[in-house]
Image (cartoon, rainbow, N blue to C red; front, side, top):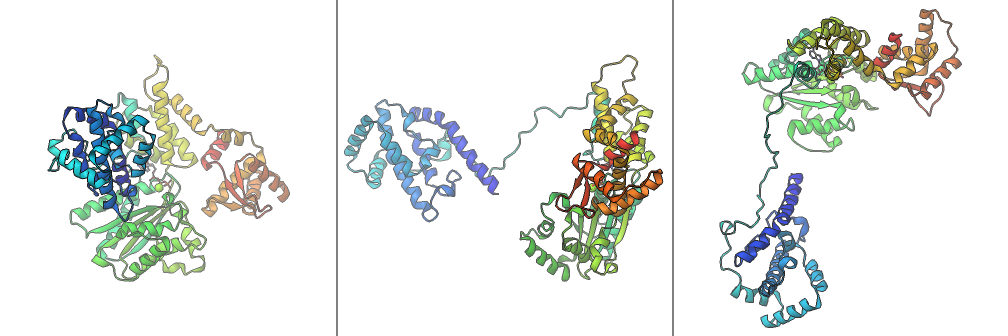
Length: 554
Ligand code: ATP
Ligand code: MG
């Protein structure tokens, strides 16, 4: 709202500035058009007069003062005009009319001596300098009896009062894809909403039945959905909610209220309370107050007897030291009358166990669901369904991408990105008479190399055997923990095990620490600087995909 206001204000100013010259011309042509602006200046509600520009206590008084001064000034100016003086310096634009009296005083001071002399003589002629007498004189000679209507002054700039800024409509329709490759590229974009979600039929069904049953029974519950990135968690849940909304619109299920928050979009985990409260009730409150209000709301019977479905995406990021945000999200749906269904999505498998470390885990009664990484066949199917019969890829090329990605992570997002890049490479490659015009193996290989050919990948490839093994140990430990952070000690245990598997001589703790420090110095690892030794925390500074790709490529 305030944004709109400021927009209106700046808009009105720019309009008045832009149109001033034409108004000046009109002033010469029409006898007294400049006075037509006076009523508008007097109007304290006019958008032309932002409250910030007038003292709070005496808005009306100052407006009157301004108007009388303007009349006085205009009277003087009209007299100048009659003398053939250039009106540019005196005829104020709308904004100028609203400027404070101080500005006027200043302007008067800097006037030339000659102008001062003329002004004095004019004042002498009118008898007095007080605004009252000036007004009297002017009203008898200049001011029209009636306020000029808007119609009579067509050239007076007016700012629409309740304008909603709009974007000009397209003059040309959006460009259609020029060729097959362009169309394929559009369809493969991760932001494009797919027509269907193949390979997630079972997960869709499970989530749908869970939410539907809770809505039908008027009860609450919580579902914990986990899986590695790009396995279609968000896409599937969104599709479920879209279908449930449709069913509700068709009166097949009772109405419900769907709200969504995302841990990634919050600067602080406690913002979750603020957002949930605002989306549920429209109320704005501080985090603490919002938490208290939500606690109260979920402890008492739900008003309107309507189920609320709350989707919490990227739950991992709502981790707090006391874990109270996550705990509440799991706890609220268990309240008897809350009528709250919470769907939580995270990458970590055992987050609930970690939260409930000192509490009674069984109380939660969570329904769990795990999204497995896509296999190569599934990735191939997903790409084919996205392309929807647009023949842009050679069969082998598609298989290569799917196999490569499935071997690394099974991430559909990455697979789509590589395919999309391959279509771009194919489009911009030099025309080859022997080529089919389709995306082939060479294009896909180039896209794959581009995706994984960062300096980090080169550094991993060039690292020593023990360093490479240590990176593999980090990934193994992260996967075991389901977290992206560990301690040197934990990783070292994995490293020793890997040494045995690979038939290498296990290294000592000191040697292991040296390996870890070297990887930290290359910025492949992020090490906790303050606490050295076996307890120091270890994180990756590269994606797991990059490490696996670099090590598998060998
Ligand atoms: P993250 O954990 O990183 O949030 P996610 O599991 O939520 O990942 P999504 O955002 O749902 O992953 O999916 C990533 C991309 O892959 C989206 O563009 C989505 O449309 C696409 N995608 C995932 N699974 C499928 C599928 N089965 N069919 C078609 N497209 C899919
Ligand atoms: Mg997601």
